[in-house]
Amino acid sequence: MIAVLAATTLAIVTQDNAALRAAPSGGAAQHAQLAAGDLLEVRGERFDFLQVYDHRRERAGYVRATQVRSVPVSEAEAPQLMAVVRFLRDTPGAEALGIAYVAAYLKAAPAKAINAEPFDLLGVMAERLARRASAPAAPKAATVALETVAQYGVRFTSLAARDGSMTLCYDGDAFRRVLAQPGATNEEQARAALALTRTDCIDPALPARERVALNAWRVLTLDRADATQLSATTRQRLHARRAAVWASVAFDRSRLGEAPQAAAQRALDELAAVDRSQLSADDRLAYDEAALRVGAARWAAQTGAAPAAKLSVMTQRGDDPGQTCVTLHDAKHAAALARRCTYGTVWPASARVAADGRTAVLAVQPLDAWTELWVFRLQRNGRWTVDALPPAAASETGIGYIEFAGFVPGQARLLVARESRIGGQWQRRFEVLKLDGGYAAERWASAPEKVAAFSRWTDADWKQGSVILR
Image (cartoon, rainbow, N blue to C red; front, side, top):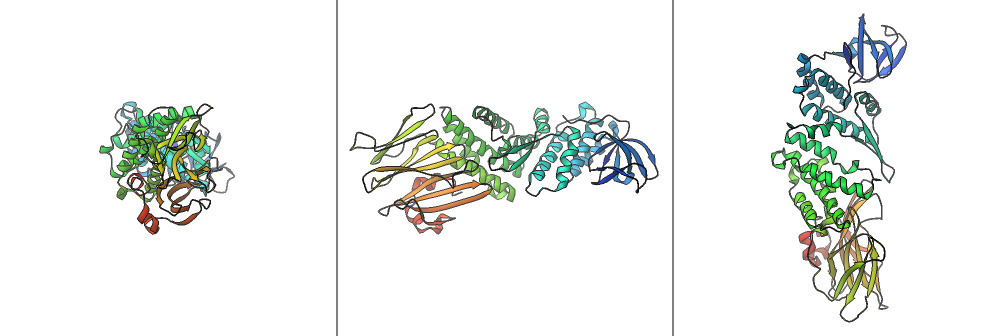
């Protein structure tokens, strides 16, 4: 809840580094350095200075009249205050000043006249301030602004990622108020939903059960806005966010033993609904992350079994709770040829077998937005091995997937596609792996058409279903 100090006459500081002095003189001792957005109580005027009291610092003093603006808090002045807020809404660096004017407006306007707009404007500015303050080389002014807006009840949460980076997130109070307003427009509801469902503002240490509940709430919140009634830009953002969240829900349902197909198909449909020609550079990054998350969970949408082949993959419960064991079989042997267990989700429909019956592959998803490729391979000594190929260098902080793209007949070669984001670094590779050479990449490129083997031996199902070819 935004808080405003009660005072007879209020003034808002409009310039950073304004001096609060002991006397009405430019040479007087400086009590404090004020920032744009600071709220002062005016108690008098002398020369070109105002005598003020700073409640935040609990200091009295004088400030130049040109560095502040008196704020009438009468009902008649409310429209003018809102006009200032609308002007400041899209002014980077003026977030604290804009939030101060929102506070003044909420004090001046009658309760029956307050709708979702001031809370929407407040939320937009608070979120932008959080992003500015989270930047690697955040300006000092952003840090000062965080302290300034705290006097209005605007709160932020600092989240530490496992890679050591920090993300500052607005707590979303204003956006929750937007959703609670019965007259909020579709645009306002969509902006609020997008702000409240950011993946990077989920605590990495959140317990699994609470994360499942949060994801369920996220999809309900995102579905409140009617995408058909939104601007083109907001509509694409909403579809991309829905795709990412539904992919997480599909994984959650698989872990709970529930059918994930509907959630995974919804993720694919939402991703397909994004018009990439309407995406800005920043929105394209969000879209690519959504596609990456959907790609990691796309096999959850499949209901059928793997195609019939010389080898078959079977799953069964492991000895420990939550464990799944995968076994490989053929028609000649009663016992399993190979066995490996995992606490991840196994996608049986993803199993593919090479024509010579010496290699099989399977998608296994151990984490939300992280899918590996298991490779079963008959060695020259007659023994079978099972190896897990990650999307990139194994990382608890990254997201990504690797998927089978085809076999190269008679050459002991495997086509794979990888996409990942590790520590802010994006990678997309199409590789030809040597099955008998430690899975070393014989050839690779950033696009499939640049690798000759992909033009000839690409698996038809992969080409039709993969999102990496978007």
